Image (cartoon, rainbow, N blue to C red):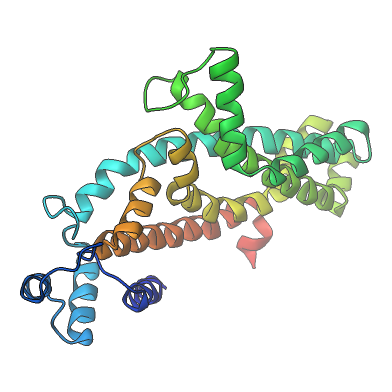
Length: 291
């Protein structure tokens, strides 16, 4: 799968017009020829592709074409912690809000809380983060003067980016939790647990939530990978030096090695997260392990 993703990305970059050394003023033919020879772009496409895959297999994505003083591995190592911090905190917030709201909504089906929380979830899904982020800055920074509007700083600087990024995931998790819990609460083993005299808290926490949260676990793998690489809008709004920001700059600059390195890194992360999700199914639902 990683090979397929990298291959398709490489092909799309080559099909797209332009290159990393082109600009408004065309370079002399001799200078362009020297640049192409230096970076191996004068070789046949299959030779270039073979060199690329050899580097990817060794975990070495080469040097940035636009900033040759930095390797792609160094750029990922430098900027990933910013995206990872924002992404992990946002997902923790989304889990707490989403699971709590979805569980209570399932237990109080068709109540005012159920309708209200699911309406709030629909609102959270409908408001994009490039709208929510500036609204939070306007209210909390420019009107109330409570939080810094941008840049990387102390814990207070993380609040608005984390909320902006986590709201939409909290909405997804709330809806998934409610649907999963409603299905599990109607199961025979839940009725049996209640018939044996177990407390409602024990039934919910020890039995219902283990099966009801399987849709949330399925969503967690791709969501975490998307959070690590898909924070570009939030990073732009709040001027954060994360991986998404670097990726967009690399695309605009046609920095092929950076684009391919980040794509390969994130595709491998997605597969690792999905593998962890698959293994966790057996711990959440014993029926899956026995099958």
